[in-house]
Length: 118
Image (cartoon, rainbow, N blue to C red; front, side, top):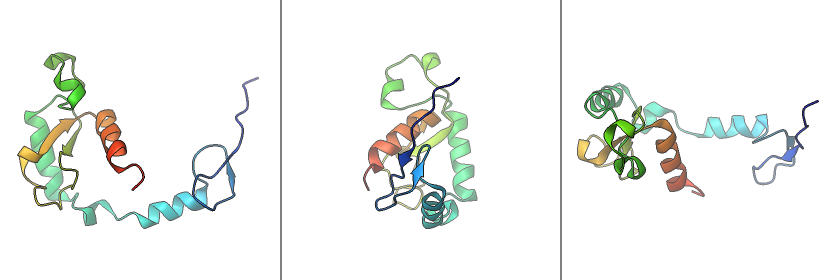
């Protein structure tokens, strides 16, 4: 029989609901509703076209870790990161010198490190 995992209190401050993991469904729905939609954050058709074109010419991850490896040992890039962290609505949002191709896992790691606690 598989080991049972202990229930945890929802990590949302003030929520006493027990969950098997992560936020409770109510807090999860509230958080999702509070986050602006991608189009309002600038991730629209123009961004999708520009980032797809960039990935065509930069197929391998350019993060700090991968930049030290030979090109064929790097992860394949699937996302374009804004180096300044401001996204497409920032002053350099559509400036390719402000972009770097990244794998999903490296981009998620970078984003989490930059936005944790904000």
